[in-house]
Image (tube, rainbow, N blue to C red; front, side, top):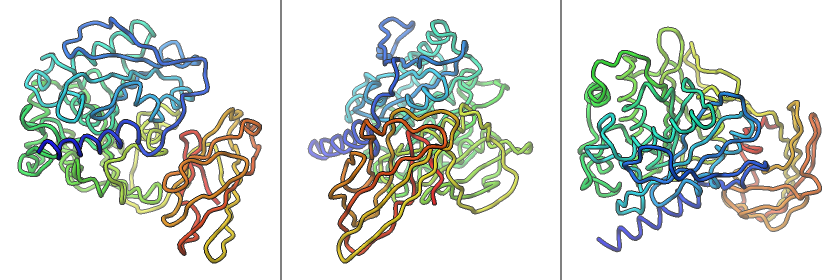
Length: 434
C-alpha cells in the first residue's frame, strides 16, 4: 500500500505541480508574486501569495487560483496562465498554499466536518480571509470574486461555491469532485476513497443539490455560475465525477439535466451548456477528449476568465442547441504550412497580431501531432520536442506590433503522421488558424 501511495503521489506531483501540461514564464511585468504573512483569521494555517498587476482599475476583480495536491501557490502561479491573464485584464490573483497533509502531499481540506460548515473553520475560512484582505488592501471589488483550481484546487472551488455563494460570483473547477463527496479524512485521498472509487459518488441530482442547500439554509440570493473541466482519460479523479458535478449544480439552479447547447469550441473540447429561462449559462461543462489528470492546459485559463466575464466579452448566454467548431477567440492569427517527405517534415508558421496593442514577449503553445518530434527550429526556441510544445521568442523578434507578423518554423521527424497542430495559443489566448 505504501508503494502504491508513493507512486500516486509521484504521479500527482508531476501532473499537478510541475506539469500542468503547459508551463508559462512569469509575466513580463514589474509586478511580482508577493507573500502576505498576516491576512486575518487562518484556521487552516495556510500561506497566502498575491499577484497584483501594475495596470489595474481602482476596484479590481479577484480570482482565487488553487493548486493540486503536493503543489503550492507559487508553483501554480508559475505553472498556469492566470497571472498572464491578470496582466491583460487587470484583476488580482490570490494563490493559497494548502498545509493539510493527506497522503498526496499537502491538499486543500474538503473532507473534514469543519470544512463542510459555513464559517466552521479550516481552509475555507482561511481562503475567505484572504479575499477580505485583498478587498481591503487592493480595493478588490466584492461583486467580482471568483474561484478556480486544479485537482485538489478544483475540489475546493466547488467547496467554496457551495459554502459562500454570497462571496463568490462564479468558479471554474478543473478535475474536481462535487461538494460533500468525501465522507471524512479516512475517505481521502483520491484513488482509495468511496468518492473517487464509486460507491459514495453515485447520488441523485436532488441528493447532490441538497448537500449544497443544507450548508446555508434559508439562503435566497444568487448562486455562483459554475464551469467544470475534466479529461475523459482521467483515472485518478475519474471522468464519471464530471457528470455528478453537473447533476449537483444543475439541481441547485433548478435546471434540466439536458443541456441547452452543445458545441466543440476547440478540437477535443466538447462543451455542454445549461442555461436558465433568460438564456444565461449557469453551468458549463467541458469534456477534454483523451486528457488524463493534466488540466488546465493551454488556453483553458483564458476560457475560465472569459466565463467569469473578466475579458470584456461578457459571453454568458446561449439560446440554441448546436454542435459547431468555433474559430479562435484571441487577438492573434496563425498560418502554418507543412512540407513533408519520407520520415521528416518542416513546418513554417506565421504569427499575426490582430489586436490593437503590441505584443512584447510571446510564447506560442501548440499540440504536436502524435508521432512527430522536433529536431531543430528557427526564429524561436522549442520545448519539449514532442507533445504539448511551447515556442518562445528569440529576443530579437519578441515584439509584434498591431497588425504585424513574424515567421518561425521547425523541422521534425514523423512516423507517417504529417498533420499540422490542431490549435495555437499565444500568451494564453487561442488564435484563429488558417
